[in-house]
Amino acid sequence: MDSSARLDAAQIRNLRAENPKLRARDLAEAHGLPEAALVAAHLGAGATALQAHPDRLMPLAGELGDVMALTRNRNCVHERKGIYKTYHSGSWAQMILSSEIDLRLFAKHWVHAYAVVEGDKRSVQVFDAAGDAVHKIHLTPASDVAAFDRLVEALAIPAEMPLFEARKPVEGPRAVPEATNALRAGWAAMTDTHQFLGLVKDQGMNRLGANRIVGAPHARALPTGAVLSALELAAFSEIPVMIFVGNAGCIQIHSGLIGKTVMMGPWINIMDPRFNLHLRGDRIAEVWHVVKPTATGPAVSIEAFDGDGELILQIFAYRKDRSGDAWNALVEGLPHLEAVSA
Image 1 (spheres, rainbow, N blue to C red):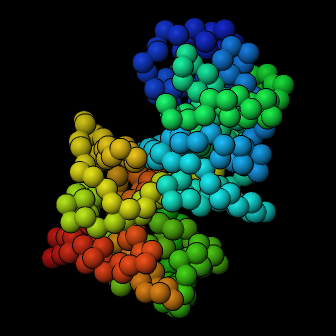
Image 2: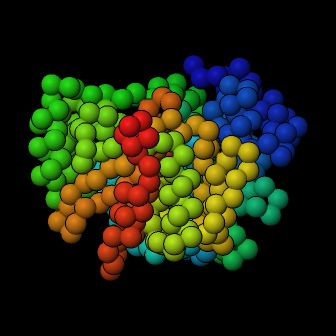
Image 3: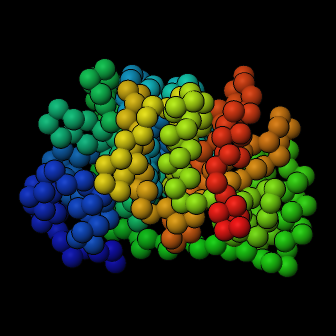
């Protein structure tokens, strides 16, 4: 039984009312609650349960006009304004492919969804089976409120406070040293970055485990400060990038230029008019300079992981109709741990 069973809906509503300025995720963690419980406790009082599958939600989200899309994990929040256009369904994954809202969706993790009205604020919030946030859509002053009302009317379902499953632990780095040569051979033979996960899975590994043992030129360790350095240099040099932040149910991508970074306590922030990033720099435990061969040239990324081995974010060159050479040179010029320790 999940921890929210210790508090009934009225108690959870009171808890929320007593802490109006505290972020929902922080309040939930402080009291051992799934974040979704804070929303579900308001069913009939500002929250409406919705059909959660992207095939139902995403086409109607496209009618909301200009909104803010939010996807996060434990260590990073990715916010992007835009319109939900060009939805593609699929049996394994689904996609939104528009110039500003760019998402990869994994419907099996879209378990609980709610329309939320708090004063003049409106949002659609999606959670997984454990009650962790998967994706949120926040209306802005430019959004179509009537379209939001139509979405709620079309997708509303009867619901009570659910029981949430236990959260699955993060898988730490998984490497198979005896498969190192096979990993290197398969890595060198890649023609598309999407082949990577299949390759490491076939060798009994995961992303971080593979990075740790494959060796140069495929993966090299960077200092933990390399993420901030790369963001600052990309902003200063006006090098467009792609920033991927995700969880098990959604990956959200920003493509283009970024503004200057702003530090606020442990947070690394990008506060651009259409894109915001909020990254806990103090939780970055490992950073890797990764090079994957593709048919159109090397895909060079910076990958950051936390202390449990969970992927925080990835940064690539924005290569649409342009070369990634400027980004590649930027990453190559960062101090690598081999050079630091030499």
